[in-house]
Image (cartoon, rainbow, N blue to C red):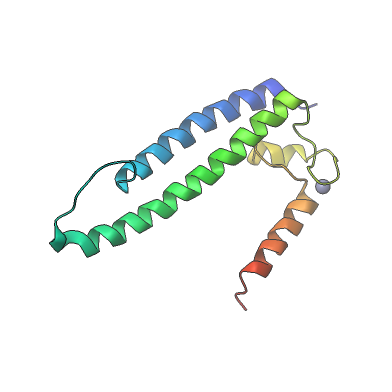
Amino acid sequence: MTDIQEFKRRLLDLEARAVARTDRAMEAAGIGRDTVHDSGDASHATAAASEQFTEAELSAGTLGEIRAALGRIDAGTFGACAVDGAPIEEARLAAVPWAAHCLVHAEQAEAADDDTMPTL
Ligand SMILES: [Zn+2]
C-alpha cells in the first residue's frame, strides 16, 4: 500500500530544492534585480540570461507539479490518475512522486504535446 506520508515528506523536500534552484536560476538571469549591464556586454548578457531563464522556467514548472501533488495529498486524491482515477503505478510514483497520471494517460498527454511541436 502507498505510504502517503512518505510521499509527502519527499515532495516537501523536492519542493524546497526546486524553490532554491528556481531562485538561483532567476538570480543568475538577473530577474527581479535592477541590474544594469555595460552596453559592450549587452549581447553576451542577453544570450546568457535567456538560457538561464529557460532553466528557471523548467524549474518553476516542476515546482508547480510538486505543489499540485502536495495539494492532492491534502485533498486525498494523491496516487489516483487525474483522467480516470485509476491507481498510479507504485513504481511510477516512486520515480516521479508528482505524477498526476497513470502510465497510459501520461503517454497520451505526451503524445498530445508532440502534436503542438511537429518535429517530423
Ligand atoms: Zn489514467
